[in-house]
Length: 574
Image (tube, rainbow, N blue to C red; front, side):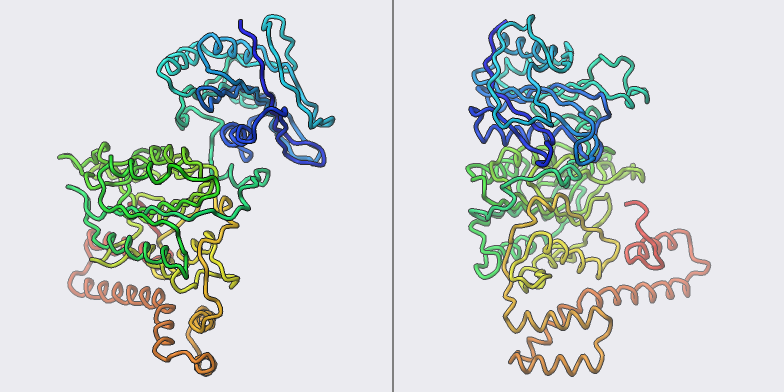
């Protein structure tokens, strides 16, 4: 066996300090950051922690010359009374990883760590660890057996020049009692690939969204001001056979670009557009966009088009200009761009602030099957990432938006309006955060079509970020806020009208501009009322022409009532 000269890192909860990362002096800051993001935050779900007695071993290769390996344990309660406290130990190996070194690391992982930092007697001074005789090693905690299958796959990947990334776990006590494992010493492999482990095989990786919302996760970078703001706007208006054309997508891209580039609003440094790309061009364009970014840059990736739910695990893909269905009505998957490919590309970027906006509805891969039990997309699992906020118009396989001819999609329309008018600045502080942007768009969309359910994931990643600025001192902004206040309480009363007229005069606001503002604020409610009237008239006419009403017509009216949430009706399936 070879001698290992290792840096050391520890992550756990310390008295009066909370969760901290300690390291030996020689460990670079960037390695500590990778340890947090690629190990701690990846493998520990604070909302669904493993049970007492749980332990696992892991290896995360940062580069061909830098490898982290170590163990994680459930350490019980801390001094604050919090249960299921994680204890991570990592050794940092510098040098090219080859098969003999890998065998030595396996032996070390199976024996266990030679160091242990008492949480109640913490020392900020950690020393390097030198291991020269594995057989004489005296572990402070038990190790984990590395399965032969893991060893074989890692050897194959190493010989191909791939970076290794795996974890192997031994379940906790209650998990054993529930029959999750027959032999408490038999490890459970979670991954041996450089990619994110498969959802069926990973008890550690649960919901990334909830993990990132854990209060114990704090990064200094979350309070930084972006060096630059950059956006890539992708639109797919026309696919091949089997997908409805969406000509309004071109307008989506145009108006979003205009508002992001406006120096008085969002003032983005770079806005790229990509219309109707094929799969290769879409992936390459995103990869090029994400490259050569600084850690403090903001990246916004926007997509308008169709989405496709691939399976009941929530995997999904986005359409391209080549997307089509085959003769049996099933979507040809190779013509899509899978979400996990996009996730890999975004994960490779150095930029720690990322916002993904998906304005699309989702369909099933096989329209003829029309599986009512097919769930929605699992955005945290297949597109999520540390520092990445995801905004989406829908998550279910149903029509979340409708492009009428060349009109904007509903979701994009209100996102753009919120920035253009400054109305998304809910606290009137002169800046619009990502959370305010999302909240405005959702509120307006639901006023017009209550059945649509926009969602946001991991908003805390960018909660302190000013996406755009609002001209709160401008007459238009002041008048809009006052009218929104009155309109939100119902119809504008005669007294309210007198106040508004006086305000318009005192602000020296053009009367036509005041009417435009009132029309914009009133648009969602009026559109909803118009739809209700159309529904009622159609229903009355149908009953007049055909009574009793056929099952087909009943189904059609049920679908419309679900769309409008009439009498509390909601979507049933797609």
